[in-house]
Image (cartoon, rainbow, N blue to C red; front, top):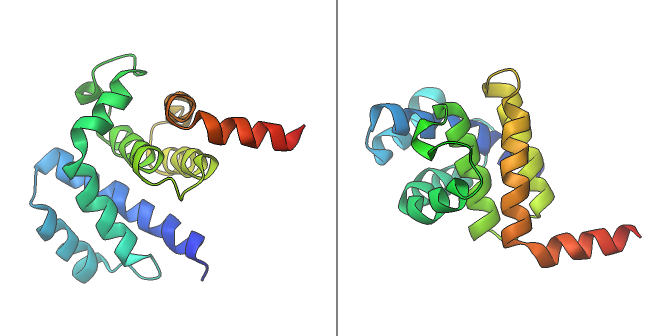
Length: 148
């Protein structure tokens, strides 16, 4: 299995784990143990899953501030599934420059399609695209220049 597929699976598990953390406020280490032992991460990138699960809550303030700039309502009022997806995408855009912005956007859209409400992928795409334009303008410009 490729790294990208293993990361996709890690993101899928991270959405579920972050949802649990947001709703129940269960201890992060306990959530990680549950996913590793009870749910099994299978072919997912377990290290990346752990990074997402722990780094997003640790950096919640800058992540939510970046989201709040473009959301139509307070971040706390966004559906918990969509909020988890947005936080993963935003984390990658802000703190993982090694992950291309297009990957972060595409993964966010796919996660919203898999777990969110009917049209949530459009909402997620719109917000993550605006964050990408704000925080990765050089990468976007280079990408566009390459297409000309």
